[in-house]
Image 1 (cartoon, rainbow, N blue to C red):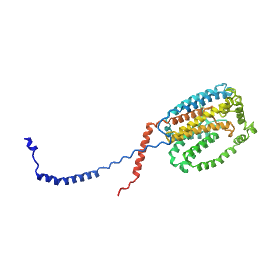
Image 2 (image 1 turned 90 degrees about the vertical axis):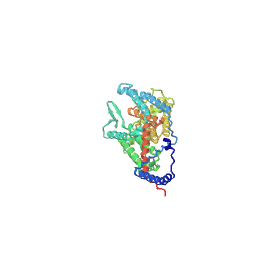
Image 3 (image 1 turned 45 degrees about the vertical axis):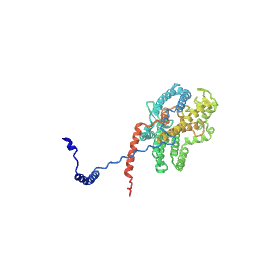
Length: 452
């Protein structure tokens, strides 16, 4: 019964009617679909993914790990410094504080804290310092302003320290690291505008000049000179025009001349630098005793603890003139070893800068390396009578609390840059989101002409 309906044939008249209605129905469906499509809200095109930033030449993503050669140089200098601080300060500490171990114990504590800071600087990814650039810089400026306002402790006519519960802190040591971080962040951010005077040169010079002005007011001309040279060196490497640097040096020359000639005790030191023996009992006393100390050491030295100049002949033998005690007790060989160890740190620091994973790391490694290297070079030149006498310590070796801790922390940051660790996941995600937002803005602004 049901099979008859299934096998029923269609009439030819019905087929012709279907063919006549097929075309109008298709046209009506197409028109309605077009109308509905116009009524629907247009879908926003998704912006293309941000193109990955190409690494600098010689930079890859493969990690290097801990730079053992740099660590070995740091530990050797720190250990040798502990020995020389005890040797050069024992007699003075016994006379003033009734204990041969007064400075040695304190330096040992600072060294232990510094090693913790070294480890922390190595483990913390250096990219995090980009978040704290301006808070760190403002904190340093406020501390330096406080010293100028007289809130610090005056020692030997200079107000460079804050003292709290028997512990002293020197803000200029913190300022070295803060300035390096600021310059690295700003130079990397403005890398395309470094040829511009108003954008690439003047702002950095003003910030560095303000810090140097506050430090020279303490007074501390040695640290000011180191920071000034580091700033100009980083600007030159970043691509600033050489003419800008030359003009800034020409402007600073009269200021430096006035700082020396306009201050009687600085003028006497400069004259003593030209002829130390003519001022043997006055401004040339320290440099004369320093040269005697180095000359009496000979090739192999008198032996650790057997030096004579530390017996109240050479002032500040455990701080500003510790390199002279090294020459007296360890001889020319000891001086060469110290120079070699600092050379290793500078060479590995340059290697870390060239192999950093980004431009911020490159400039930060350069700033830290040049600060430590130039300060060491300046100290050695003062001790050898190659520059006018100025109180400046030898990094890692001279006695000092905040200086030792800050230097070791900075070297830890340098080790982190040298390790070339992969970028943390949070930083990668943040960079990707920032790239997508930038691309969306570009798509909105760019107008593409329709094809004719």
